[in-house]
Length: 515
Image (tube, rainbow, N blue to C red; front, side, top):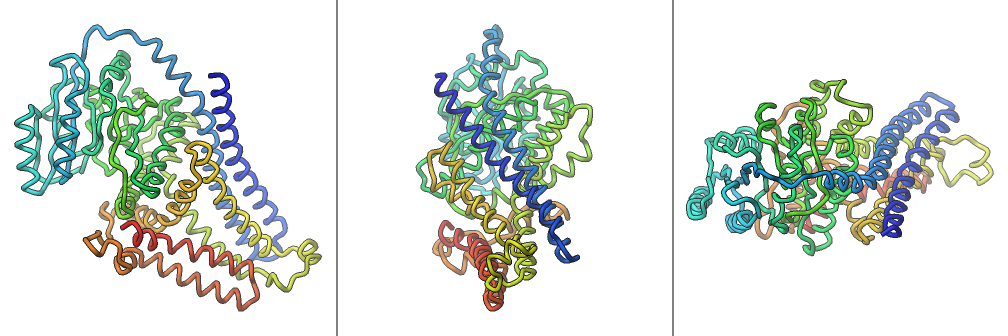
């Protein structure tokens, strides 16, 4: 066990060191670029690069801290668990499932499985919040609930989306606590309530979140997508839980109904869980994260599904940032907890917007450089050609951006292929995430606009291009600029721009390949 723990700690140190090296190297080179700039244009480029390096450095250093601190969470939760006392009384629990036009067979299977949860007889109620608009779905679920003793709750309209559904269910719930599960989550450990409810002896505990996971074996794409959440729950969530900022993730968790009522119900935003977590913290309540999987969900198997998810996440995170700055209470927040909420809101924006800005800066850099082929080795080391310096740095940065995720997935998930896939998916989602952030800033509809897959169109080139017009346009523009760089004998610059052009075609490729 000691050897195993030493290996885990070593992996954390290696991970943290990688991020810190990237952060420090970027910021030091930025200082160097400002020092050697010799005209206004070069100063502007150097300062722009410095701004991007500082933002990137902040996220890299914060990520390093989170990865390292997550190692100590298991010891913390073990200490909390040992202090628990056996339950003498069993509080009542409402197990609820909000649905909206979902696959009926999956809903029925998972509801029946939820009824197998182990707990004191007569202390658990089951509720289905049915927001379905399809009449056949509604009728079948109504019959199923009547046959199996499940309270089915409906409403007119879908105000507030999932949060509105939960708040509507709460009008009919009499139990003291609520356990929430999504329609696709199948219980793998029926001790869920038996294990979690003793923690609520702490009356200030607002909610408990468990680790969310997805069924494996659906292919490289689906398994790689699932790693997005795996990184969050296995590292970021654990580090945050040490500071009472663990995020309620919308399901596979239990909420103290009394506290939910006190804060005014579930905040009716597109990512209601993040808002609920923040509001309960600002009200002085606690939270807890249990790093154990009790249910597995259905994995994302199409790129369209991933686009919809990422649109919702980034739209909601951008909304959250505005909410956070408006309603935060400085007395309740330390510098670290402040940083945790900021990085949560900026996370996907950082990945997408910074990459877009770096693309723009890269184009300006390429066409500011003295043609590389006309510079001798001696001139390169003696002269101060900032454009060439930046091109070389850019090539190195791309190499490192490829290596780091591959190293991480190899260390933690024993897979190089998934690391490469995660890197490519992040680039493929740049425009989608940016559009979602802009939509949230201008208070546009939270629903993204793209063509849905239909039958044979799912893997057609027309379907792929129709969903990625902006990406295709950017790729074409970068390809043209690449050709111009070649004509100017700027080989490194042309390779750099060709690499960018290729990356911006990834969304089209993924729509075509995965639907």
